[in-house]
Each structure stands twice: as C-alpha cells, then as structure tokens.
Length: 365
Image (cartoon, rainbow, N blue to C red; front, side):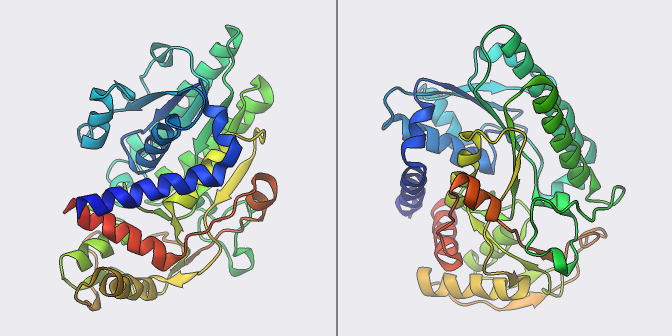
C-alpha cells in the first residue's frame, strides 16, 4: 500500500507541473528558500521542486529551513542524505538568512496553522508570523542593497484573516476587510497574519521587495499530519481505524476544501507572477459543504474507493473549552482575482481528493 501512496504524490507532482506549463522553467538555475519546509505545505513544495529538477533545463537549489521541533521528517531526511536539498535547523525568528547564501525565491511557510496547536502556543505562533517574517523581509532588502535582489517572495497568510464574514460577503473576495476578534483564542493566528500582510505590503511599497501574499482556504492532501487536529485528518483517522467519525460541533458550519495539487499550483502561480504587493485567495468556490455532510462523504468515499467498512458520524463535546470560540460559520472564497490575473483554475473534485488523501494515509499506517 505504501507504493500506492507514493503513486498518489507522484501523480500530483505531474499535475502541478502540467498546470504551471512553461512557468516551471523560471525555477531553472535558481535558489529557493522554504521556511517551514518540514510541514504540510513544505512537503508538497519540496517534492514538486525536486520533481521539476528532472525536467527543467538546469536544476534549482532547494534550501529547507525549519525548527524541526518534532524531528526531521523521514522523507526530508532521505532527500538530505541524497543531497537533493540543503537542511538548516533553525528558529525562523533567530535564523540568519545570509547563512543560506544567495537566494532567488523566498517562501515563508513557517507557522503553526492548526487551531489545536496555536491555541496552545500563541506567542510562538505570533513570533513566526511577525518576527520571522520581518527577518526574511529585511534579508530581501539586504540582498538588494548588495546588488543581488531576490526575484520573488511569497508569504503564506490565511483565510482566517476574514474572521466570520456576514452572508453578503460569501463567497469572500480579497477586498473584504474582515470581522475578526483581536483578543479571542484564535486571535494569535488571525491577527499576526493580518499584521504580516501589512508588513509585506509596506516592504513592497517603501523598499521594493517583490512580495506577494497567499490566503489559503482549507487545503488538504498528502503531507497533512494525521494527528494535526483539524477535521480532515481527524475524520480520515477515524474511518481508517474503523471507528465512528467524531464531530465536536453540531456539524452545521460550512467550508469548501481545496486539494493540495490545486493549492500548490495556485501558490506557485502567485510566486512566479509580477503581482507584487497583492493578496490572492487560493481555494475552491464549490462545493460549500457542512461539516456533517463532509464527514458523511469521508465515510462514503472510504467505503467506495478503499473498500473499508462504512462508519457512522457521531457528535461529542470537545474537552477543549475554546474549541468552538470564534469559529466561523462559513468559509468560502471568491477566486475571481486569481482566475483572472494568474490563470488559476482548480480541477480536483472533492471525492477525488478525498480518495487520494485516504490512499496516502492508508499507505503510511
């Protein structure tokens, strides 16, 4: 089954490469620094760049920065041993980017993104999104002053910067200013990302840093830790173990879910664009599905595509008192801007994507 999991990832890499078309060649003979390389997004970003290296004219250099607080993932350790990537173990707030040598592209993906963890580590969450980001932006200015300007900088923000929009702002466009608590249990993440966006825009406007902003909407796929604490890995873990899916709400909030190959395509289109100082929603506009219906779809997909026993969906109260505080009722992006300016066009349907992540999880169990 591990072979099937690998096939899923390799097929996804092919999709991303095909989606980018000739733009992938822009990575040829360049150096890319990825912070948070050991995380979910890092898994696909690193794998894609190495996939591209066997196809572009000249290989790119991939520098992976992470504090590796849970240890270096086995997949990344293998790439390092094979000298396909360079590993730097460092806290992004204290990391000296000069130690990585000349860099062409900076991707700042180092951040705690799971509510379970950012509620537990609020200060660390804010530090990565503010101090870590400032560290990298300052380095971009320094490189430019030295006569070797970077080509592009991508900051991963979040759809959480919108808070809990009123119905008239759903699907939510980039122009929506948000309805966000600045003191609630999710504020450490939401507000530090909002401040991070302000930093980026001002570093572009006043210092010429070619920075862009991505606002992810509920990405999922291989690389997402099954114990991450978010609904998709939780539900997948339930069905793969043959236990009932447990919801810690009434299941009424609605979301759209974007499969990782479509999401990574969007992020790389932003990075490789000339849209400096701009923010883009990256996700899918449909289907907008309730958490309860989504849980039932996970169970049905596991039965139909993997032949697993169909499990039930049950409701329990979370042991975490702040679990539902400031949790948005609806989350659905308007992606017109990304479609028109970047050519972003998500293709993977929800059942297809769920089949892929379930196959990948099963291969790792």
